[in-house]
Image 1 (cartoon, rainbow, N blue to C red):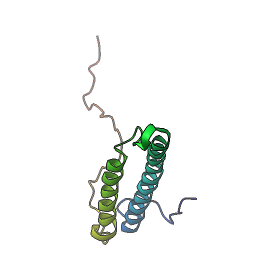
Image 2 (image 1 turned 180 degrees about the horizontal axis):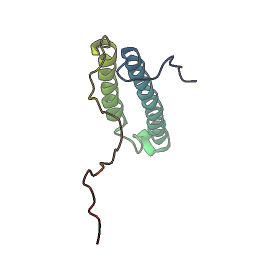
Image 3 (image 1 turned 180 degrees about the vertical axis):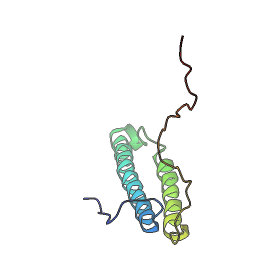
Length: 112
């Protein structure tokens, strides 16, 4: 069950921004774990089923895991050490209002 927010969610609210960033990080960690466990499963399966125990069809799995892990560590350092949640984020006054069609102010000329 997702966390309940006691008021209208607003990205300008520092507490909401902090919670949102941490939930986003948790989603990335879960995606990393699921994807990499699958990659390593098929790599090990390929080693067990191939002749001479050579790496299976996924020899680049360690590079993917290390690269993605590096990005996760950078994300974690930003979220838990660098990000400043003390003040509200400045936004433009009409940000996120959606499409608003322009209305012509010209008066139409009456026809003959």
